[in-house]
Each structure stands twice: as C-alpha cells, then as structure tokens.
Length: 130
Image 1 (cartoon, rainbow, N blue to C red):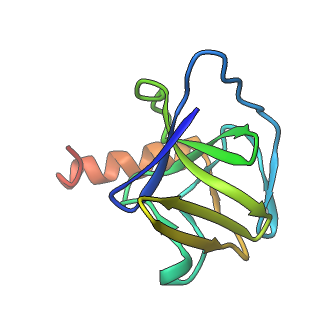
Image 2 (cartoon, rainbow, N blue to C red; image 1 turned 90 degrees about the vertical axis):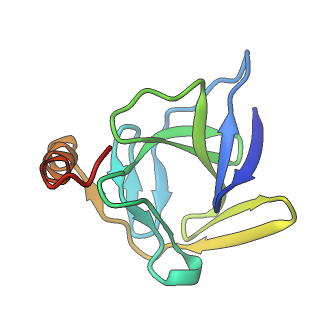
C-alpha cells in the first residue's frame, strides 16, 4: 500500500498482496463496522474531516495502523481509498507533503444506505450533483 496527500485528504493505493482487515473499529463514542457510513470525522473545524454534501465515507477496514474508507456505495476507483492513520479511538491523523492534521473524534454519526440514497436523490433533483 502506498499513501499520499492531495487536496486536503490522505489516500491509499492498494497494491498486489495488500489485504484489508474487515474488523470493526472503535471511533469516538461508538463502533464503526465495515459498510457503515459517516459524513464527517471530528467536530471542530481545524480538527475535522468532512465530505461534501451528498457524499459519505464508507468504512472498509484497516491495513496495519491505517483506516480505509470508500465513498458512498461506489466501488473503489482503481484501489484508491481515503486513508487515515489510527492513533486511538479519539484521534486519527493525515499526513503528506510535509503537512499533517490530527482529527479529534468525540462522537460519530452513522448513516444507513437508505439515508444516503435519499440524500443523493434529493441533491440530484435540485441539480446539485454531477
């Protein structure tokens, strides 16, 4: 797996032989299971990572100390994932290009696939997607 930082986010590109551990992870005040969705990680501006309206992070699993997320229900694009280094259940870290950002998580808000589909449908009807 190779990691890189681009446009305010850290990504991972999986390579042959990389295996994702699909076990649940403790984040903030809850447990996030593979396939569950969040729209943001963290609460405060400087220590938060948020997706654009209509897009959600889907927890995929871990590789070592790295936590991997896909987007909505879409399959990974050429084995690329959003990536965060796991420090503990309240802190994730992004780094690259000499930059770094800690994400402090007190609580997480999970979304169901039906909620995501409804949100995307509403945004598409408003002409806000694609």
